Amino acid sequence: MKMLLHFTPQIIKKPLIAEVVLETGVLVNINKATIDVTGGELIINVPDKDVNKVIKSFKSRGVDVVTLEKPIIRVDEECVHCGACISVCPTNVFKCEVDDSISLDHKECIQCGACITACPHNALKLSR
Amino acid sequence: MVEKTVEEVNQKIRDGSVRVVTAEEMTEIVEALGPKDAAKEVDVVTTGTFGAMCSSGAILNFGHADPPIKTQKVWLNDVEAYAGLAAVDVYIGATQLSESKGMEYGGGHVIEDLVSGKSVTLRATGYGTDCYPLKNIETTLTLEDLNQAAMINPRNAYQRYNVATNTSDQIMHTYMGPLLPNLGNAIYSGSGALSPLFNDPTYATIGIGTRIFLCGAQGYVIGEGTQHDPKSNMGTLMVKGNLKEMNPEFVKGASFHKYGTTLYVGLGIPIPILNEDVALHTGISDAEIRAEVLDYGVQRRDRPVLGKVTYEELKSGRIEIDGKEVRTSAISSLYMARKVAESLKDWILKGEFTLSKPVERLPTKLRVKSMRQTGGLPLVKDVMTDGIGTIKPDVGIEEASKRIIKGEFNHLPVVSDDGRLVGIVTSWDISRAVALAKRGKVEQIMTRRVIVVSPSDPIDIAARKLEQHNISALPVVDGKRKVIGIITSEDLSKLLAGGT
Image (cartoon, rainbow over all chains, first blue to last red; front, side, top):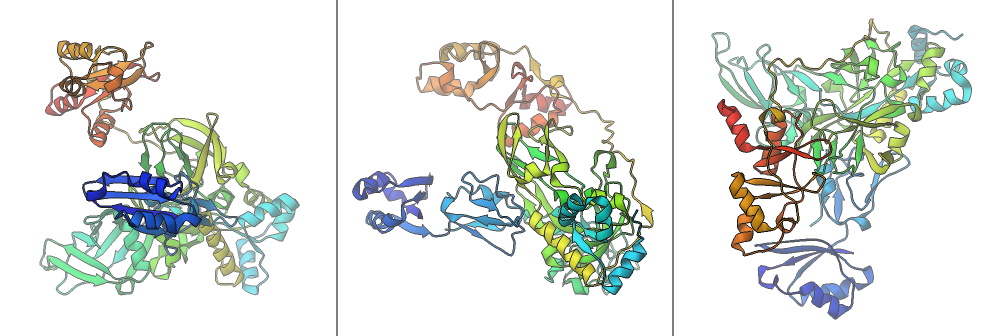
């Protein structure tokens, strides 16, 4: 399961990820991290069975957690199934089906955003 | 020998005995039966394509206002339409950008919005005459309010198109979509075996007056398209259709990141199987249609050809370029192209669509010419400074600072022992290293990802790179990445000022 973490500037200096990993023993995979004056934003991936444990641990440290059940949202009325998203995606989220329609596999998405700009029809959005 | 006429085929459409298949189905039929028997079995083959077609637009007539206005400048949802026609006629082109939303919204989107029944804001100015006194107007309109709304596309339905890839170390944002650096992907367009013109490559049945499927309406071929290039199997069509009869599913505005807007057009042509030859051509398969892979990393008209691949390979998702496996994807939609061909087949089977015999054939011998440029563009090699100093990566920072002071320049390309560019240091890098009392070698402070130009590039390419990357100089390198000079923003400003 992917999660979006928000850090306030007050706690940004603390080694929070390391603390959570040590406390829970869960191997947290960082997909994306950005830090600026307004705080930090991380997208992490954790095994489904450990989700609650990890959320609790982050929340106790003042981190805001949003679970991303569908990291990427497709507006089906806009999609024309061209496939522009396929070859720019680093994790092969998009697949061309037998009937040449395009399907997507949420599990693989790391929210890098490459497909968002590649889509000529503005049919893809990252969930927040 | 089978010989049919278009009139005979139409008779079959009317009495319900017509046999229609899509071009994909025909490929299998010709393979199984051979062209002779296929021509007996099949009366019409339907084709289809659905992709970005920038040379598209519509002529609109708004009706007269009271008091009347002779519109000189017209905007629809902030997208300018060409108004150099009679008082209230305009041509809205797919690639014109919105003046408020930029590349997010353009003429293609205006056309889609009109076809979808949405209301569009018209803003216009005129200069005022005795017969057209009004100078400004703003109103909202829907497609229904217009007298005529004719889609007229100067260039549609490319027979086949190049495959785009990128060997440079920068991402390139193109009309084929984003091309990742270092052959990171390859993007193609066109529907291969379903391609309208590839199913009749000699234009035996397609010409002026051919009735077609255009964005869900019945439209017409009105001539060869611009840049029609039959000798390279890159024929194109100019087409017309009534916007008021179109289906929004087959006409979609689009926006390519850092390129601009366009229109996705769904277009299908029915091919009457008049004889064995026509049948043979419609039997074409993806494996027989080849496209050239071009390097869009080179920002010139004549891009290097990196290889040739078939549509079968392209559709498999991977091709090989220079021994490297490269992921492919389409920018046109095969899924929708098939829907076009199926819809057209359906219309014919229901007797709603009859075929038309062209009144004139399309040219088969034209070639595309390049622009005649009389101005003469200065090239990088005419402007660059040559004989510049370079430095080796293992030289000390102090030594580098001395060289910069001695040479009185701000950029020092770093080269390996064989003279190939490996980095660059600027006087800024060195001052910072000195200020921080850093000791060490040039390679520790140099920038490794160096943006370069080639000596034969026009200076406009250099200027664009300087601007895009917000830098002040570009090393000029030859094909082997050996440094032969440098071009700075100063060199370019001097040129503009009139002295070099």
